[in-house]
Picture 1 (cartoon, rainbow, N blue to C red):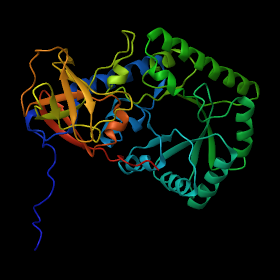
Picture 2: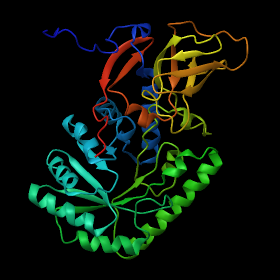
Picture 3: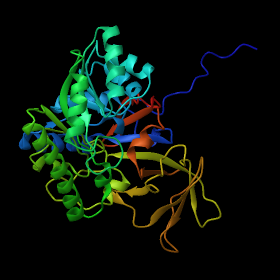
Picture 4: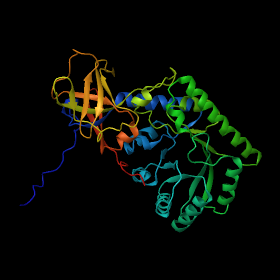
Length: 382
């Protein structure tokens, strides 16, 4: 039996479709809120005189990176070498792999990409420098290198300025590797709930970074770039006087986790990322069942929130996630429930891994589909 060549999976929507025509589960970005978030972040960075290098691990989408660059971003960050490849192919000119890499295959790919874009990478060990030196020499390319300093995250990074200086000695033997500065990132700060608590933690991280910089300066070392920070701490990072560049990732979208934190009025971002889902069953009448579960939503930072008319629903709660099903219950007995076939919008608990579950992002404006954006780096974690 010959196969029907027309038997292909159609896209979840087409430009011009109304919201109601989108095939679910589908990840949506509401363009008006998204564009306001981009403009707000860029304006604050510009006012502080600090470069903005958004983290593309949050969205994995070249169309979004291009939108950030048009606003004035100096480049982007990626967290993995393979993740950077679709952005290089899309013409993004300046990419920081804000992470250490392990293994010759990754170093070789990074060296080849450096022939097509300005690439930089982090190190915290002389062995990483040796691997980068070998592959860039073979490819005939150049890399910018940042030494990562542990400022409290207790993950990657060297402990102090003497350790930085030892790595600079190793770098000096390889002219194709240029010391660019320091990476100083503290991820745990991003999700502290209280505004004052987050401010105090960011201040301590900035003080540790400043102490390393002062010691390096006394040794005659200038750091062109000091990069770090994230969406939760960016307000404080911009004002610290320490960072020359910040790396927020989630700010175009926000998510339920970030939405649970307290923010100053000056730098508050809007929810723009939603998962469109459909009521597929009314169960026994005490619940409704959506077609969006663990294979459509990351729940590491909590369950999604039901969105209703510009705010979190006061009547419905997403109570449990199964592989293919989401269980939604009323907050109080007797409250009306959406009917079979109704569309519900959900705010994901954690935007980064949720985007990694989807092939495309449906861009909507005023209730109508405007574009479909491929999430081209989805699944690229090498």
